[in-house]
Amino acid sequence: MKPENKKRLMIFIWSLVGVGVVAGLYLYAGKEPFIRTTLSGLTLGSLFFMVAAGLTLIFGLMDVLNFAHGAMFMLGAYMGWQLYTNPTFIFGMLPALLAFSTGIMMTSVIKPYLIRWEISSKWQNFLPKAAYFLALVIGVVAFWGFDILQLANTAMVAATTTTAGNPLAEISAQEPFVQFWYRPLLLLLSGLLVAFASSKPGVKTEFAPLDEMKSKLVLPIVLFGLTILSIIIRESAPVAILLMNGNWRFVISIIVAIAFGFLFGAIVEITLIRPLYVRSFFIVLMTLGLSFVIQELVQLLWDPLAYQMVRPPLFAQPGKAANLMEWLRNGSSTIDVFGVTFPTYRLFVILLGVVMFVFITLLMTKTRLGMIIRAGVQDPQMVEALGINVKRVFTFVFALGVAMAALGGIGAGPFLPIQPAMGEQYQMQGFITVVIGGMGSYVGAFVGAFLLGMGRAFGDYFALKLSLSPAIAEASTVIIMIIVLLIRPQGIFGKKE
Image (cartoon, rainbow, N blue to C red; front, top):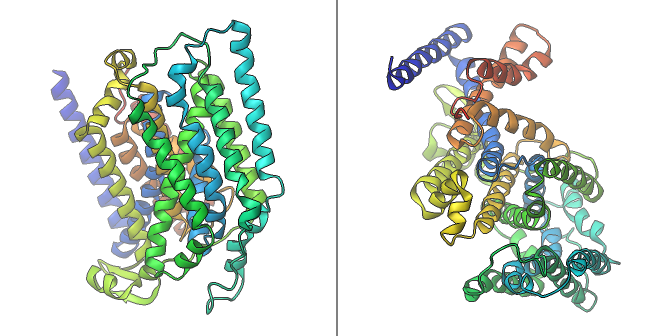
């Protein structure tokens, strides 16, 4: 049999098996439990995909397993929760983050000059180490005496006190400008030192053209301008955002979480991952250690407690909407779906996962950047020879993957407890999703995520109905992975190597 006909036959057989399984579940469970469990499975699948999509992109292009991805999912939830509840902490820390990022993003500007330095191998080894050490010292000095815990407590206080009638009552004052102005300046210098160290002065093993200086300066200039702006609006912006309509505040929270994830991902790739590409096992250890550092830092700032993010008004009004138009008009908390009452926010989460899949598909198949990414997967040396900066593409892809994880975190915030350990569970499900779908296949990640979501939802249903141990439902995703790997070791959409 020809390979094409064999593939079509297998698709037909598995389609029949899928239809049979769905029909059997419908007949056994009944209409209402089947629809409710299916919608719950789609919600979980959407969350799994928002974690797995970034993992798939990062591994597909860079061959990097990011074990800090779950921690970045958790950070997105905390950033969105902070901004929505009380954004004082966000705007208090924003100048520092932007200033440090501005310095780091100067790497591509100064590197072509630094690698041409005529210095001995002794100085080539000493200068980066000295720059990293000095950057650390300056960073510590920049935050010395800065009451970061007070800023972090603003959202905690707002979430645990009854100040709904006056949302501005619990906003803590920012540090006075006369005590604050030098901190971003020192962090800018610290970032420049990190850029200097990562540029490897005197090492001529890499080709770095001196032209295109204007294009390389665009991002640092934009970030520097945003740093100045963030210092100016540090005190007024939190008040303005809290006075906004809750729906718009939620939209801003999503944008901020995505932007934070992208910027944080770019910093991690440039400073921590890029020097370790030749030592892939070290990347695994480094990202695993980074996840522990992030989790401990979050526990220090917000305590190991579980917080619940308030749903936006569009999803919080009492009552059940009969259709989408009535929901959009009244902001009902539930909606009728084929005779089943279902929370409207969970429908939003499902939509968010589908929109992310459409975005990735269009990016990878319809844009020049997607073409470069796909080419970089196949032959990075050839792409580099064509004059394309593959390292810059790597930075973008890693940052985009982290931004997707952060989007998943803020998307999960209004219906999952926000806590330091929330990233671990979803990271594990993300890895299982990637394995099932096929390493490096975003289509496989999408299919695998919803397959896992349905498996987990129906596992919970049968565990409750048959009075089984909840551990059996929790193991359902692993069972699905084992079955798929026994039948197709490379994953559903994976390719044999």
